[in-house]
Image (tube, rainbow, N blue to C red):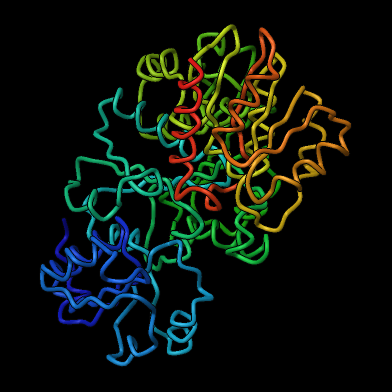
Length: 450
């Protein structure tokens, strides 16, 4: 890694623990910073805080006191999930103290270039596809970011022979200053996370930070079928590389005559691809564009696309019981993702949905309920989902308390040939810590039926 001097003998506040906070604290100490770590969870209940304390870190737990700013920190490195409305951060902004997320640290120390992948939906699938194709093409990729691996830990071990493929949330992108991916990629933009950003405009502005520091020497792979993406890329200085599933974009990735093309060359026939769904075709086009920009040959791309069946918690096939197929789409944390999940199936769908109430209604699902024969809801949004389903004329609707009960209810009212689909259209945080925990609970409940 690069031994940057930015933080040497500087006071730095790390706000929030979890994996990213712990990794950032360790890295900053190696870079010579005077690190204070702060977390809302009380010290007695905080294993990470206890570990850092035993390693000599200054640790303050239980609240976010404004006194943490008394030593005039050089910067704050915060957990992406902590909102900027937090009083400590509000005061820090007033004092012009820079606020970063650890993706900025990763960029500063990395010897390897970055691919920065963001968007409202499809990030994880696109990131995983790009990673697998680049591996198959011998490009020595490493994966990091919102996909589950802390970026600054990956950057510590990366060399100039690697390339770091990062999945980036809007929360992470709000905390950058110099981060500059060699290739940026935006899958799509849909109204999301308004409880955090306040408005769709602020959400889009955060996403657009992925282009912020790029120059004409860099590339921006963007969805030419998405009006929001086309609007946000207008100020981008990078070389634009489009992808489209609906029209020929001769300088990018597109579909023609039943095949995927990049620029003027055929890459693979679509009938050979095993990953289902129109939305996944968009993810594949995006990943192909990245791969071709980095010189991966068509044979390597084909080997991946003819074997890759998806990622965990994203339209993940679980099992078949009495000729009913169960799919786990727990990563569908917004309405657009659930829309795309529903239309991926030709057979009758029993939809399990619900979760955290972010203040929106679900009327945008109404046109898609024609593919749904029954629905089981749970969680904070249960009644809102029922209201929208009734507007669509859906008769078979049941509300239960949790995912386990939802699985039993869906199975009880299913018939041979039905698809039982968990696609919540909501974040998981009303009943679960993560969407992964929610998906695993669904899978466990399905296996109990057996």
